[in-house]
Length: 200
Image (cartoon, rainbow, N blue to C red; front, side, top):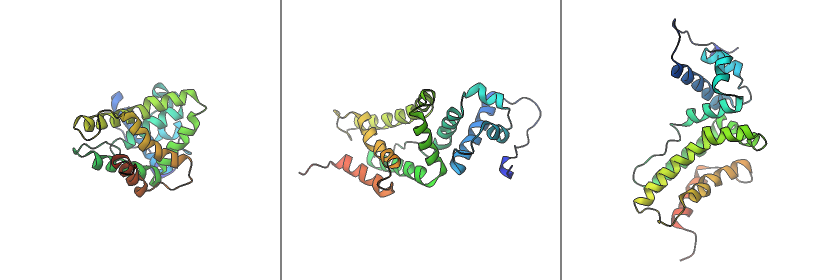
């Protein structure tokens, strides 16, 4: 057991459920972003959060579901979609943060492993959509739609396809590592998309 695995001291009395859940998600997210998924177990999370494994199973049926929920909450602030009124600046800010998260923290490889496992695990695939990707897409659709309404994106453009073009390209390079995933790559994606690639 490491020093970090020693649970914090708790006061007497039963803690509110939302506080318990927040502690569990915080412990899970910290483990994923610092160490990855290999050592993520219900035993370890329960010890770090100061709860029983029964409590974990009450909310999360599997390690994958717990990991996805913890991951989303850990990166929620980092991947918040800014709205400065400038869609180019906001896309660059969000994609740069996403690239840094996926390439500079253990959480990046953890998420890719979960995506891989979800290909043959229907329950994990459903958890991925419910606990991570659906909310990430909702935030992106919301911001791109606002830009569309502000006249920064053509009204005939399907913003859901834009999401796949931008973030899908990053995931492609992460999962098929023929080319590096860099800040410059993210910038080029936004530039090509907003400026167009057809010769004038």
